[in-house]
Amino acid sequence: MAHFDPNARPFSKKWLNERLAVETLERVLSTEYWIPKNINFLWAMGMVLAATFGLLVISGIFLLMYYIPDTQKAFDSVNYTIMSQVGYGWLWRHIHGVAASVVFLIIYIHMFTGIYYGSYKKGREMIWISGMLLFVTFSGEAFAGYVLPWGQMSYWAGMVITNLFEGFSADFMGGALNFPGLVEWIRGDYVPGQAFIGRFFMLHVFLMPLVIIALIVLHFGALRIPHVNNQDGEEIDFEAEAEKWKAGHRKESKVIPFKPVFLSKDVFVLGIYFLFFFYLVFYHFEFAMDPVNFDPADGLKTPPHIYPEWYFLWSYEVLRAFSKNPGLVWFGFAQVIFFLLPFLDRSPNVAPASRRGPFKIWFWLLLIDMIGLTILGKLPPVGIFTPIGTTFAYIFIALWFALPFITKMEKPVGGK
Image 1: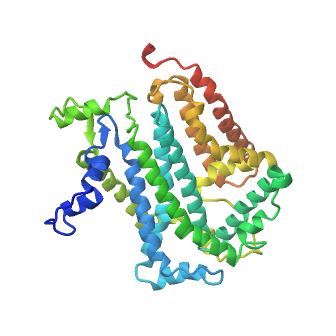
Image 2: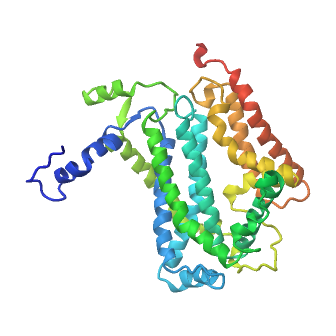
Image 3: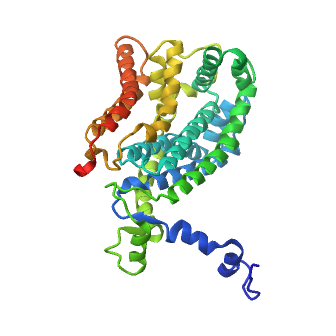
């Protein structure tokens, strides 16, 4: 039976602790959540991502007050009402637009940091998988938000992306599973219209944020059990090292508590990040706002070159490097292959890529190739850009097929 102190003041720490176990939560989630000492600033990207998501939520709430999800009014509500009539509406839109773009830059840094240091290996598979689920959900959230301004690129990007479902349904599901009306079901009509914008509005402001929050909880929970990896790939006995810290042997201990020690380092990195972020908000916000999207949506006038936002360009280039059916196959491959990384990497080594021989070459080739695909995805598929894009797409696919063989032959680090 629970015991309650009748003299505890309502909502005092003791009163809350008896009812919500706040001290236990604080100990489990912060003061006795141990972090390795030998990590660098790249491990703060998770906190930077959480802060950026917070900015997206706050700025989104302010924009939601004036946005009208109507095909006749959406464009003006964004580009006229919010930008011209609402006090500091332009600022909230710039914050939301820049954060929606920068969050993917941070996600890619976070993702490639995990690949470089092997943070998906040896018991940390669920950390990686939950992180990739977050990436996919953020992608869906970003696409739904891109539709809402109802500009030319919003409309036509929505048209092109939803057409992909038609290809998968007609060409790959087949038979009893074939759903020829899938695209119309998603759009709510034969072409993007009122039902389309209403559905994506619901996804963007309600469903996707709930899923993201749930996945953040899952990601942190998956991280809590095996603990954070470190930049040397060292196996640390967290319980023994934590006892050293609590006993006062802080120099000898290989770990530090999340709060206040590591958190103070996170806050420092956040400070630097916010300087960069608000510099973009005030001086270079245009990179996050496609000029074509400042023209109202017109279903009778196709833009000369349709392309997604920069963070989708690498997979878009894989799609268009091939003819229709192979393109859909390899596009689907590009979406799911990162999920399989913990199982494709056959090496027992948990170490930085710089110490893993051929894997180091594989890592840098993958990074350079994805940057190349991103650049090529923004360019029109004409002239020399077409064979170059196809080459980069083949390299991307070949790298993933080669990974199990490269890592299986990898020698143990340190010659063990």
